Structures are given as structure tokens and as C-alpha cells.
Amino acid sequence: MNQVSFPIPPTATLRRWALKLALIALICYLVYIVREIWLPLGLALLLAMVLSPVIDRMEARGWKRASATIFVFLSFLIITVGLTILATPFLIHEAQEIQAQFDKYFPNLTKPGLLKSFKEMNAPDAVAEYGSNAIDFVSKSLKKSTSPLMDIGLRFASNLIWVVIIPIVTYYIIRDYHIILTKALLIAPAKHRPLVQSSVMEITTIFGKYLRGLGIVSLANGVATWAVLAVLGVPSAVLLGCIAGLLYSVPYIGAILTVVLTAIISFLGGGFNLMLISVAVSTVLHQIIFDQIITPRILGGHVGLHPILSIIALLAGNLLLGIVGMILAVPVAACIQIAVVTMIPKLAVEVDLPPPTAGPESGAIRNEEALEVAKDIDASEKMKEAVATAVEEIEENLVAEASVVKVSTDQDKA
Image (cartoon, rainbow, N blue to C red; front, side, top):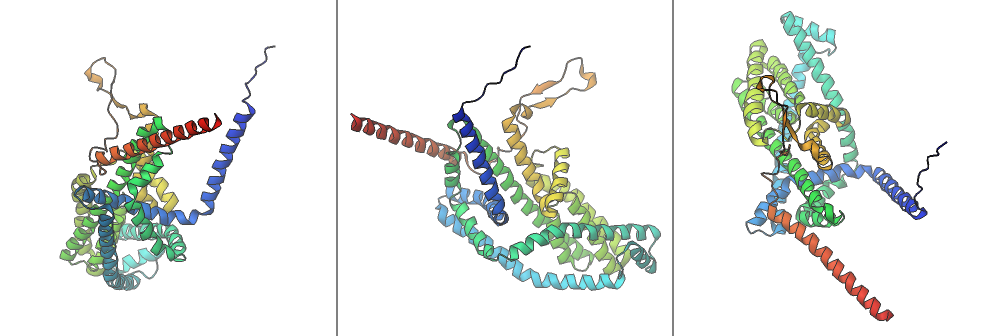
């Protein structure tokens, strides 16, 4: 009988692998122990990714990076805090008025209670059915989404020091962004460094570009919603505009919730006719003007994800973090796709299959990159080259110093 033997690695090799695995396990354990810090640090990193390209452009125009960072960062903080302080009392007042009207018309939020309330208003059966389903849907969606947000908020509120730490960390990340990248690239093996650098630049570009564009589109959507509803005479138009702007960043679900809330508030404030008009106008505004015209121009259409992957990412994000997870799902999935394509290059090949009537030829494969997101890259190519050059110079200096030390040691031994 033939015996199958497997080569046993040397003891030294096994020890090295054991040490590496132990080190990885220790790092994972430490990361888990301090898991409470990753959310605020992640927020600081996201802010830095959004603001850093602005600093790069100012630096290219002659600004010193530290001065540009202070100017942009302080401007961002002043505008954000100022708008929050000015808008909060007004929005709370409008929310209280809506709550009072809602409790007046719908004292019982169970399905039978909602149907009874609609019938007391002499609403048609179809309106009563759809209206009760819509209110029930909004109630359940908000409860499901706000539960993880409340947990996160309570944990964050218990550590108010993060209110100070996040801006400070964000400032230093922005100021030393390219220095941090240069030091990080030194960890990667020299032969893989160009690939790692390109992947990191592409991922940060996707994330930063998506978040900036999403912020602009959401702000524009909120302002447009407020203006249109105010012209129609819908009460609490400012609050609805703010809600529409915040929810617009949540694909699919955000638009549905906005239309449903608009229908409920317009019905409470102006009756059935105002509800029909406001819902029709809101649907046209969100589904046609923004989704089909404005958003593709600002966000560049998409971040390179197939619709199936987008839906899967949204579902996974909703399960993990609710609304916050859905907001971050698409750019995170795009970054994962870049990493996978980098490791498996053949997945980047685009397949073009001719129609059946085109002839007997089989499908031709075009060797084009599936993701062409680096055309309008925010960080300039010069900065990318400077980072690569800095890494090479550091390594050359280290090699030269090691050679000098070796020669000196050999001379001492001689």
C-alpha cells in the first residue's frame, strides 16, 4: 500500500507562523476591547476624507496646509454649529405642533384604530386602507431605525469628551493626511506599493467624493422640498424640508418615507385635496427631478456598483446599523468591490455579449476597467507621485544607513 506523506515545515517556520497568528489574535482582541472608540474616530476620519481634497486644492493655489486646514475646518464648524443652534428651537416647535395635530386625528395607532379614525373623517375606503398602512409603515420603520441610533447616541452622550476629541483628531488627520499615507505605505512590501497606493487613493476618492456629493444633493433636496411645500401651503414645510434632506441620503426607503410623511402632514393641515397635490408634486420632485436629473450629474451617476450589489449592501447596512448603515452601505460596498477587484484582476474585465441576431460569433471581452472613478481624482497626481517618491527616499536612506553601519561594524571587527 502506498503511503501518502506530507512534508512537515521546519520548527522555526512553525514558530514564526504561531507567533504571527498569536499577534493577529492579540490585535483583534485589543481592537474589540476598545471598540467604543471606533465610532467617533470613524466620524473624524470621514470628515477628514470629505474636507481633505479642499485643502489639497487650496494648497495647490499657494496656501500653507496648516493655514488652509484651520480656515476650512473652522468655517465648517462655525456653519454647522450656527445652523444647528438657529434651527433646533424652530424645528422642535413645528414637531410639537404636528404631534398635537396627529394625536387629535389619530389617538389610536393600532391598525383597527387607524381605520376607525379615517372612517370618522369620511375618507374613502381605499384612502383609509392605504393611509393606515402608510402610518403603520412609518411607525415601524422609525422604531427599527432609531433603536440602534438611540443606543449609539446614549453611548456617545456618556462620553462627551468625544465632542472635543473628534474635532481635534479630524484637524490632525487633515493636516497630516499625506504624511500619514506615506508612513502607512512603508508597511507594504516594496513590490506591492504602487498597487496599494492606487487602491487607497481610489477608495478614499470614492468615499470622499460620494459623501461630498451626497451632502450637496441632500441639502438641495431639502431646500427644494421646503420651497415647494411652502408655496403649496403645507404646514411645517421647514421641518419636512429638513426631514427630506436627511432621508434623501437613504436610497429607496428615504424617498418613500418622505412622501408618506408629506402625505400625512398635508392631510392633517389641509385635507384630502392638499394631500393629493403635495404627494404628486413631492413624487415628481424626488423621483424625476432629483433622481433622474440632478443626482446623476452631481454624483456621477453611481459609484460603479451593480444594482443587485447595491440592494444587497442596503439590506446588510439596514440590518447592521439601520438608517446610518444604509447611508454608508453604497460607498463601503464600492470600496470592498475595489479591494476584491484589486486582488482578482480578471473580475475587472467587462463582458460584452452581442444580441442573438448579430451572428455566430461568441461574446467579445473588452479589457476596460470596470471602475473609472479616478478620472476626476481629488488628490492630485503630483501629490500621489510626491508620496511615492518620499517612500522611496526613506527606504533608500534606510538602506544607505544600514550599509554604513555594516561597513563600520566590519571595520571594527577587523
